[in-house]
Length: 103
Image (cartoon, rainbow, N blue to C red; front, side):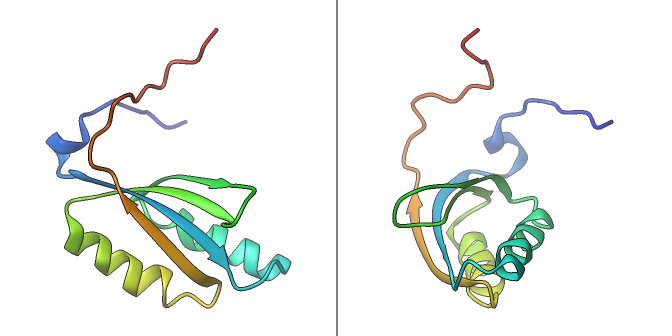
């Protein structure tokens, strides 16, 4: 069993949050499972959701700065045989972030 601590991203060197919309090359099982395996090995991807709409997945990526994201996007996502397109949005300000569920 793992252990989780809630930390301020800025205090641990992850000042930049990027929302990345990912479009896969195709929807074959090998592509979907290959993409899942690819992102599982990257701790900078803190969330990845399969979505409806134009993109196949929405990811939240936390990195130190723009250069770190550019390295991750160029060397990991865009060089992957599973990824067709990446649309990135840089978070300017986080208005609300919680792990609390509305019970």
